[in-house]
Length: 231
Image (tube, rainbow, N blue to C red):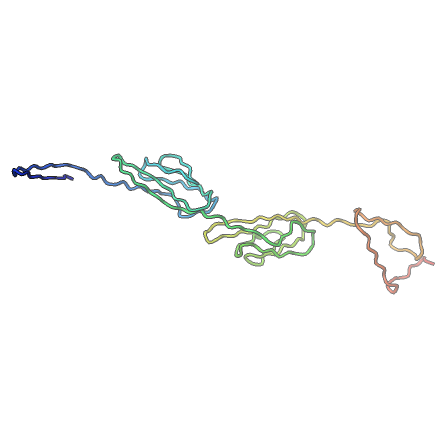
């Protein structure tokens, strides 16, 4: 552009000043590679600023790997502005600002499961939280619906019950809850004969393993079958 200024003095003399200037096009900075939202612990993304040879502003979740590129790692929840500055050869600067949100994972749990069971004891109904998740089909588990299941401690061993939930942001978390089904002890009684005559000598009985208790049940006389050899 040429700027012109003209002046006329009292004598009618005229002079003109001409000044030239150039308006340089403003650079347009941009950032590529960033999603609008993430879940904590999700995959990282490499962001690239344009034009090249600008610089990113350091911030949470960012690892600068070059002047015009960074790695975004969604490790911290919250909304974050990411800025990229570019200055051209004429000293004109533009800033690109993009915003992304890192969403926290849902809090997932399983209710109703005991830490341990005895083999063959009663079943428990389990409920996953939040509702509308999914139990993983596994040994000992009968899935009733999307968020409920029945655990049957039929066989001894260690088990892990898994329940997965996906929230409205698409963030997924899983609850893994262990339990143990303990085998039943093998109880026995030694020292008792199969039959006795009334008034016969006593016998000392021993229960095994030690530490248990004896229970005695007297049969009704009508159910006792007379034994030969008793007089």
